[in-house]
Amino acid sequence: SNCNQAIMLISEGVDYDYDISIFNESNWQKNFPVRIFTYLVSTDKDDEKEMEFIACSNMGYYVNMTLKSDIREKILQYLFVMSRPINFKVLEKQVPIWSYLYVDLADRRLSNWLWTKFEGIRQREVFLDHSKRRVDRLQLKYDSQSHMLLQESHKQVQI
Image 1 (cartoon, rainbow, N blue to C red):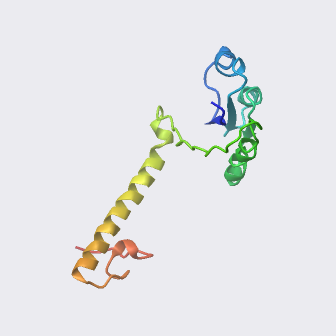
Image 2 (tube, rainbow, N blue to C red):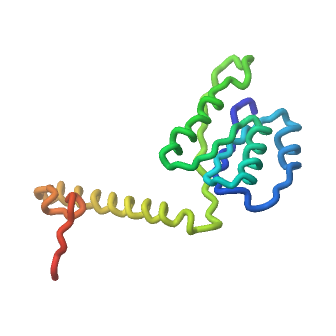
Image 3 (cartoon, rainbow, N blue to C red):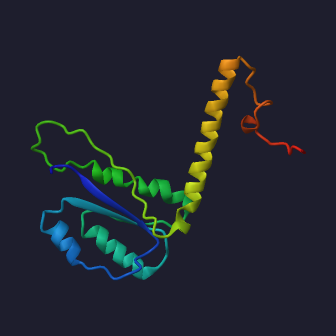
């Protein structure tokens, strides 16, 4: 199709030997339909060379992120590459379609904290929604003194 396609690879390194023929068959012979952006969260020089080769040979770019403060700024740089026109002969402008982030859950240790955080936020929102409906239904006073989850600091309750 005549649209921008990209793969963003965020990794701590290349753990195994990959076959370059994957890119030859899938991307290089088909006039580079997919750009590959690689982000390395490590300082290993061997992995850096491999990740840079993958990105640069597939019309993307490589970024090494060592500081947490640089992550947002460096990752959002892909937007400048993706905004470049792919075909000047297109008569009608296409609406971009954004896909969701795919997280490989092979190693749950890397994603457990995010899942726990998401579940905690979701459960708090469900409780607050339920409480608000109850307050509206019974016409009760709704303030931070009567609901522990709305308080800035929590007092320990003795039973």
